[in-house]
Image (cartoon, rainbow, N blue to C red; front, top):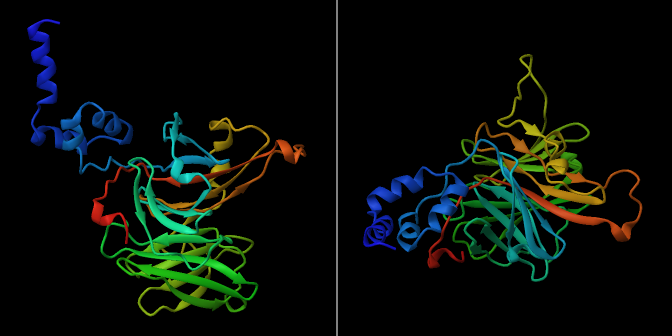
Length: 313
């Protein structure tokens, strides 16, 4: 290698941070990850970059006690990534690039950004096992005003809601009569900033929503109806069959014997809710020993790092 070539090579790594940082801030997720892999100075210059968010969320497939996960991006390109943090775990919420993960072996709950591997541990959750748990959070877990809400059916007559505010050392529990609210199965969740309320959607057979106020801790149930203009009367619309509509089973090239349960998300643009779904194996697959049970989660392609002070809350 000539001296001139060596000089040129050194100049790339010596580019000033004030030039590199704006470039990093303008990149999408895949380009940002490539950018960070060039050298230490480029990685340092991109320390605050979170990646430009795409219009649609991506989809992450995990499960089968394997760290190998499949990621489907907006352009339908697939990637394989290793995420040992999701082995034996279930995602119960997804928003703004963060996943809320329940680790079944230990009963622990934590926030996780799969693209940076950032993890934020939470206080011990009141339940040691999952039972139709669905959650939403108000803002990124690094934010001082983050509120996390997890809802589940306590029994046939009661819904249990557990709330955790940023910096709190324990969860607070609230119980509500399921008979009063006539909620059958909650499949989607969202947070409405203007009203400071969590919305929990029951899409079938007659769409309903349970609205929980973080101010007075009261809950109200509403029937979802359309007005004369054909728009939703509530803050959010929702998609109850998004996985099927987007033909994801074919795009992911999943075999006929695959069943998959998904965790929904709130769109960053428009606020629409993608509900969780349970997609069974194709008709005719009767051999349970050969069936595969996978899990999936919608996720915004964002990159976040956390300081050592934010590793636990």
